[in-house]
Length: 82
Image (cartoon, rainbow, N blue to C red):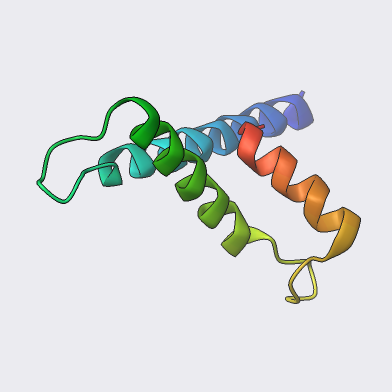
């Protein structure tokens, strides 16, 4: 029972951080004139922002940057928000 509860708590925090990532990119999606981006500009910005955010997190357990298949897998998982 404790393991199930612990897994639920961890999943809640993981989902919260994924939503927070999108929220921070949302708040940064502002043009040079101070107006919020819309349409293709917003889509492009969100994709780049998510990519940059995931890129900084792509670090192995030994502290080194991931490379190859491990990095590709991590980036797909990170960008999907799972």
